[in-house]
Image (cartoon, rainbow, N blue to C red; front, side):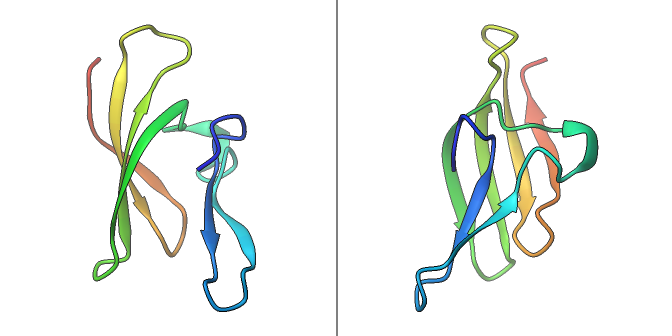
Length: 81
């Protein structure tokens, strides 16, 4: 993950190629953005990841996002709002 870019990268362990998996354009319009990601847990069997993220804009606001590792789409599982 990259905080400055709000991006999750996929890394091919065989070739070393790094490619954006989910960024500010996925989903469109920045919905469910990764403001300050602080943890990621991968579920390789279901091809998803859970990410904890804190807001840069609203102090104390945090969310757990589910990311589809195939499409890069994100949905909010739970938040502190």
